[in-house]
Structure formats: C-alpha cells, structure tokens
Image (cartoon, rainbow, N blue to C red; front, side, top):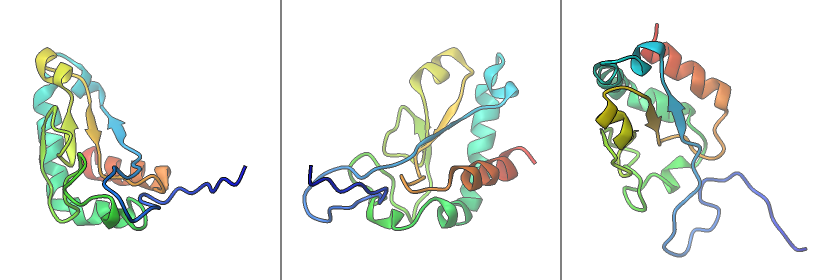
Length: 127
C-alpha cells in the first residue's frame, strides 16, 4: 500500500495544515461538582507557572505543531479560555455554561508518553 505510519506531531513540514496532538481531557470530582468551574480555573492557574515543565514531557518535536497557528497556542506561551481552540487549556463551552465539568490540555503532541503526561498533570494540579 506504500503507507508510512508515524506519531510525529508534524511529519510533513510543507503546507498549511494542523499537526497531530494528543489532547488530554482532565477533571476531578470537585471540577465535576456544582460550582466546579472555580476549581477548573484554579487548576489552570496552577498549570501556567509550570508550563515549561509540562512542555518538556509533552512529546518530541512539539514546537513544529505548537506555532500559534492552526488552532494551537505558541509553545512559548500559556493561556486558557472558554471554547478557545487557540489556548493551551480549553474550557469547553458546556463546562462554562453548566459551571462544572472538565478541561482540555491541548499541548501534548501525538507522540506524548501518556502516563508521564498524566503523572505531571496530577503532580501539578492535585498534589
């Protein structure tokens, strides 16, 4: 079939197209409970100062994908927002409307080691 399979976040360097990410949806019991939006925002605030630490384990060559274009935030910036596909962390519109739910970390690349990423999120946000 002449097919080449890769987990590289941006295997083709030419053209105007999105890369491949492995977004992580994350919540705790407090986030899913009534009023949990405050906990989600507090979690986002905890993640900002550790942005570089997270990026370091979120996959190789992620800078090719996180350019600030194609619904990504620049690898050098951290921001979060409601329904913002250009943010590092997206708070879904339904979560904002309902006042509780989950967040989506949009930074991990397609080649991220998911257990290391989950451990880093837990260490930053829960411990």
